Image (cartoon, rainbow, N blue to C red; front, side, top):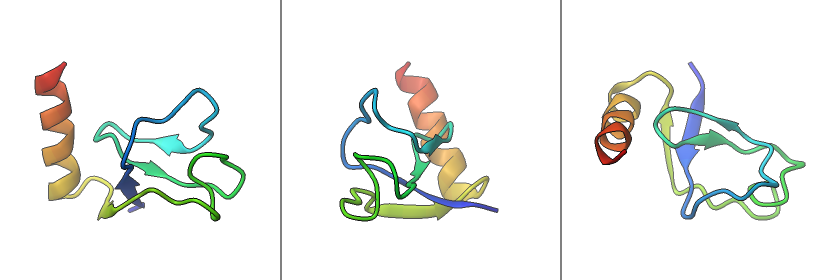
Length: 63
């Protein structure tokens, strides 16, 4: 189970972080947008958990 978070803003083309269906990502230190120095991930949740599934359903409904 991987803990990941939903970022404050959309990721750009330079983002190297692993992404999930819920819109969350796991920041990596070499990512210039979400690395250790600047980490805009306010909400962390477990991958495949209830919150992750709820966010993924919400994204699918908006698409």
